[in-house]
Amino acid sequence: MSDAIAESQSSSEHKLRGGVLGLFDSVIMGLAGSAPAYSIAATTALLFGAVAYGGPAALLYCGFFMFGIVFAFKYLSQDESSAGASYSWVRRGLHPIIGYFAGWSLIVSSLIFSVVATLPAGSNLLALFSSSLANNKTWVTLFGVLFFLAMVVTVAAGVTVTVKVQIIMSCVEVALLVLFAILAIFHAHHTVAFSWHWFAPSIFKGSGGFKGFVAGALLAAFYFWGWDVTANLNEETKSAKKTSGMGGILGTVIVFFLYELFTVASNLVLTPAQLNDSNNAADILSVLGQAVWHGTGGKLIVVAVILSTVATLETQLIQLTRTLFAMGRDNTMPKIFGTVHPVRKSPLAATIFVTVVTMGIFIGSQYIGSLSNILADGYNAIGLQICFYYCAAGLAVVVLYRRQLFKSVGNLIFMGLWPLLGAIFMGFIFCKVIPGLNTTTKWVGLGAIAAGVVPLAYFWFVAKSSYFDLPTKEDRHAVLEEFEQNL
Image 1 (tube, rainbow, N blue to C red):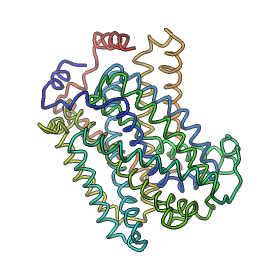
Image 2: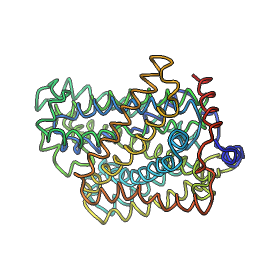
Image 3: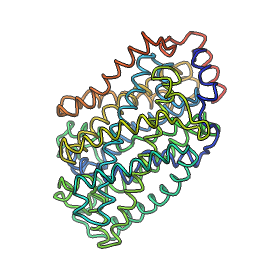
């Protein structure tokens, strides 16, 4: 790390509240970041549309490669604790320009997600009281805005407040999901019989073949996305160089099993007509809930979706504001983003900026297309951006620690081969899926990444940020020495 960047991080106005999160807190944040109930509710219908009954297989194979990226983050966090996470690590492992775009990709993906997550939030909340209000665009917009602003207040209050709220919400959410999964698999009426073929690669032959698998993998990447919030919180975590990475691993293991359970449950209980109905695009779990437990009891699963939406909006706001904070601190974004509230120690300026931008995009998006189209385009665009910065992180760990790979079998597998396979898979999906996407998704997904050229050019050539200086040989050696001490 350059002297200028290190000096900026040492100033109290540029420091987050350190050492307040433990391993359990980190696991909860990783779980909340992936938002199992929200992801299942919002994406199950889209996944079925892409691969039919091959959803369990798409999640299984994408999950395998995703764990390579999870291990990459684990080892990268053992080198440096930075709220910027991949933005900082990729700079050191690959190149400052790639690192900048890794951070920028997370920013734009989190902004888009904050919009598309707020859409079903208002709808699901209103659906508890009135189905007609849940389909009213004005009411959905109003409640979505209020919902999002409530999340902003929680995040601005500081990480200790956010985590306490997350622990309560995530525990209730997981308990409800496990209850309904058991009911769906062992108690409810099944429209089709269970088949192990749902997990086999050959399942994709009936749903577009390899093209269908690629489409399913892109959505599956969105399912898992969010666990890396533990990395963005590592400056605020106890024993961060070990705790944040382990929190990400354990959180991802939990959501993997929840996703597989509910994808199987959806295949068993719901009909193809229900899964392909565009009216169910944002709330397929409420349909499943009524099929499993008709009446008031079935609405309990909607509570899980609402809690999950709250949780994931909070964690995405954390990822977004912490990345902007790290970039502001490095002067690769306006310097004001790199300051914190004197009492709460949260990046208040970055939070206010994100709130204004997100609300503007959210309100405008209500009048440009149907809910199902906005969700589909948004998730696919986010999938592209996720693949990009996960791919960069997977490559960075292999390059940065290449001299460590053959010192043990564990290093070779978990620090080398698995992250490399994850990076190759993410890069392959990124390139392969682009020709099949519609124009809107390409503009939102790729155009948003390309837009990062503008701030990059300004802060590199005009603001002269030291972030863009290539790490020196001494810096790289220091990284390896510190890493060896932390193994």
